[in-house]
Image 1 (cartoon, one colour):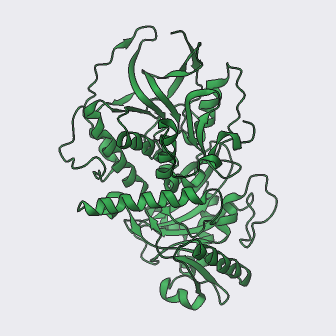
Image 2: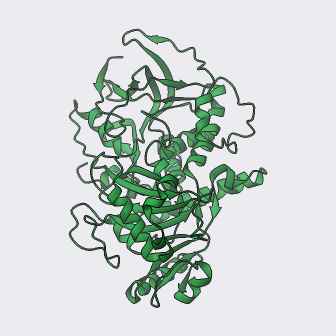
Image 3: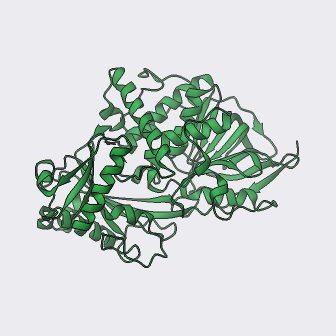
Length: 491
């Protein structure tokens, strides 16, 4: 069958550059000795990747290109939380084989830089994403329950803990909006309540909102740890390598695609050292780099497609052994809701937050992770693929948190230099705030699952279920229409 090679430059990048790492092709030839269940197994640290077994593979050599060739039913480009959960969905829900490619490794991008909250308090019932949000929450809760039923601890396995979530305001107008939100959440069937300033004193003693302040509270919300969760999913996926159904190609950027001249279908993905043929589907789940992959796929064809995903830079400040502040719940300020939807061209001030999206890219979020570290955020900036730490943003995060937790003002940020960690990630931002989960137009075996912005962890399981059902032709649990490529401007 005649085919055309389409070069991808760049396809998957770190900090805007294709990394020059050696290939780490992991085709696990046996079941780990500590393995108990493909769904429930968990490695406690991502560092286990350095002790992998040697590759076991009998694939032949693609002599025309000098690359090793392998054939899978499904090839996934991108090994963040979206790509890994899609692989998991196919492995557990079908008999298909899966190969997954990444220029780096899981948690190297937005997934590893996230705060890990699985919250509903800032969600708007009745909006287009609500159904997918609720389905994903249901799947996360079912997964945690299944882990518990096997005698394992979801906290250790996923970093899963029930914190409840609070959306807080400091003015009478903000509290009015919070009360309306609580009413909407109650009408949608959730347990929710409005907490006055006095109510909050017993729930979060360190939180100071003033006499007019209050919070919308959803007690049944959860947090997870991205690194634990990714390690858990990876280990479960690797169980299927013994059957020849799974392989990882990490630190191995995609470099080109092979496309059939007769049918137009993409038949294979080439990396720096391997050619991965696909019999059924190629799925692009490369976060903010997904637009580059699609652009290079179609640049020599008559297809017109502009997938306007952009990297939206975010900072988090993580502080070890900080005894001055203990949080009982996950918190975010009301301004976060508007800040999240602000764009670089915005010239108006976010309602209630007092922060302009361009001059002050920070809104307060605060959580305690599974290790007891204080995690403060968050920032949002459309500044391209730059992932350098901006100390001015870190200062803004610290100062903004101090407006809600005055005890922080007693500590200089400079005093915390030795105990702090800064996480920087690039969220895949879409102008309409929705991911695309759909076929790529006019290429029947090419699919896209990208554009989740800061909601990758939250929406991962629902997204994986949806894209797998599209590929397999199964009935959907959630209406996929809002996530169609047809809804994207320029497509």
